[in-house]
Image (tube, rainbow, N blue to C red; front, side, top):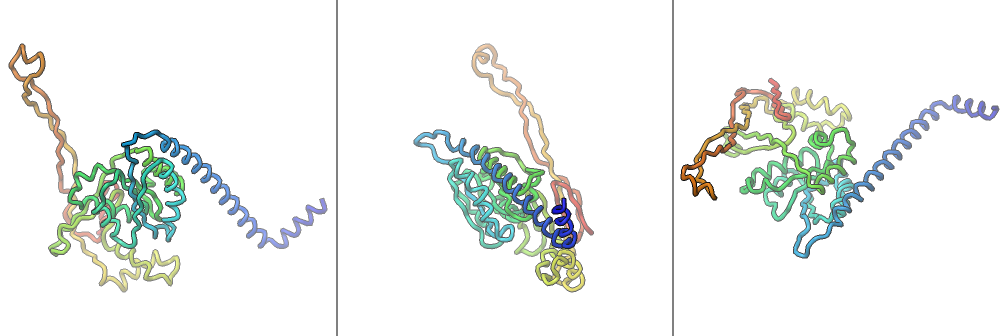
Length: 324
């Protein structure tokens, strides 16, 4: 009892050190628990991927070819390490042929998608920006209609992964990466709507150019001001807020405040036609009258929703928010 009293007295007299050490110990235990859970999850995924890779193939069969567009600068330079640690082992265990293309700057993912060839699937290992570039490059291809059959997978190694959060809600980054990689191995597919923005300005250098996104797209003054946040690095954590203040006070001449916007919404309409079809088989021996067959045709219809001038446009999952 005397020993416990002595320990309690020591802790009370050194309460600052006690608080710091307790917080450090709690953080260490939480980190170790998360690491053990991640290792157990990766072990289960590796065993499942190995089952797919153990399937017998014919001599003439070729391995499923996956091309990875990897942004190594994602997550503060940890993108490559995260991919090699949590995604690459699963792809190799599944017996896939993996080709990795590293991006070294902006718009490089877009250019890679324009010339992509001889692949069964494309994986985008990066954040929302890399995904946007890749989708834009795919839809700008001359053979875009033919290339659309190639599925696109997303490995969320970036800081902003809103689309992967939508596809795999409620998971941490490691589990998202594992689940997204396993969905590629299992060849699970889900159609996603694409947002398309076309430049209608009179400048011939930009007129007709299009941007594409899968989840959300922001264009306008607020977006331009936010991109200037790194210029105010000396403000520390306040730079995320002050970039908008200084964007209005000192950098307003470098920001486009007026955007002419025309928003259209599309819908698929089904039309049923009755056509005559010549009878075949035994029925043609007893009757020469053609049979009536119903044919269903699908067509896209576009309705203009809004035509105005705004300072910011924010498109999210088909919803439109305009800031005047």
